[in-house]
Length: 191
Length: 100
Image (tube, rainbow over all chains, first blue to last red):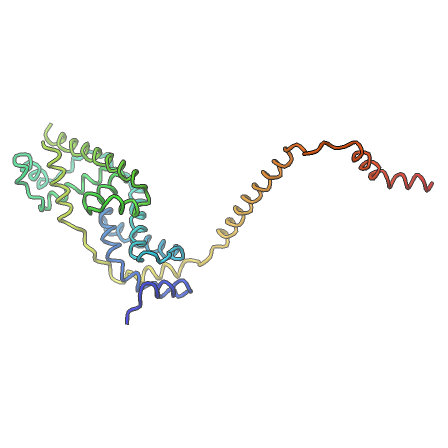
């Protein structure tokens, strides 16, 4: 029979490090999926995931058990991802000149028929990835949580540790920042 | 270029391509190996933590002592008390003088 999160956590806190392995196995898919939203290289994704679990182990005694372990872990994951974004701010100001032919075609199609352009196309996905890479860490985190994962503001506040009003302010700034990046991308292409 | 529509299209593209949740083979073993490599308690970290705690409490004591020293006494020293204090201090010397 599978041991519950509470049983495993209690065992780890008593000094049984091996009981941490089932927790890692159980929740790593979610940690990896979240990390892949912020890091492109698979080696970076794994670094983020390892850092999440090392911090989780260190801070396990601060887990109160009032909310599910998964919630606590996801808060930790989001914060580690944010730290990662802040540490890797290089190449943000690079002009969006590396647009591939497929991406250029997609933009052209969108320009001619905005409603008809396929949002499921791989080129569109690659374009949004490039746009997100141009954003500041806070803006990227907010756009990802609010617009892509479609989480409510209150939940984002809990995940990030920011106040609700700060989330709203940063969301407003993030949208403005994203608009500027899109304008620059179009300007580079058409002017 | 309709930027608002472009923004919506691109965000929809991001939503329609969620990231994969696959985990590398034996990932939990690697995590566990790293955990077992780490020292459980770092003596230096513990020592510095104690020092910081001591520094904070020392600062508090210093502030309280300073406040107490700056506070004027509630009653001015009476002349009799000063005289008593002086005679007490010189008592030993007076005794030596008397015995000679």
